[in-house]
Length: 196
Image 1 (cartoon, rainbow, N blue to C red):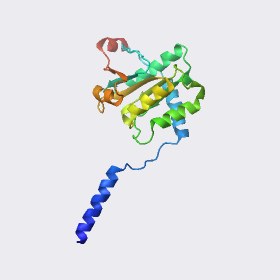
Image 2 (image 1 turned 180 degrees about the horizontal axis):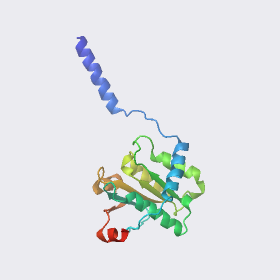
Image 3 (image 1 turned 45 degrees about the horizontal axis):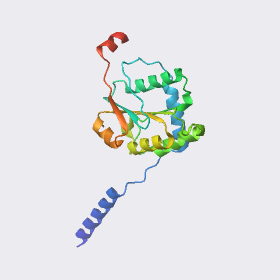
């Protein structure tokens, strides 16, 4: 009888531990703000090789770059930020965050949104604000977060994701048809020859 009671107890504990997600510590808002500032500074710390690649910005749609690890998505995002600054967009209107190496539970989109717009409250609803989010597959519920940011703040969102975790079909599902996906490939022969 005692063995059955213990087994029932263990089964109930196992069920409830799966049913209710554990409470995980979140990054404090100040730490998210520091990450926004340091990641953006990093994006302007080097020059990057220009790629033969272009995309279209459509209001209300996120641009999603999907490709294997190491093909140059991060460098491309940083190069795009530099190009926007050369066109006259202030650096403060560019929010770059790299999620490479972060656990999915440490930061949420509501924290990113709150951190950025508390740093720059005057940019709320400014259509010249750009969110560059690198290795997005490392964040839970990123599709809902991106949709909310686009709806509430009318900004541009460009994200990269590695196809090791996500395929174009997964991205379309996450963003519920509110994305334009592009495959990002390694250097072409022409790019390689130019690079040399």
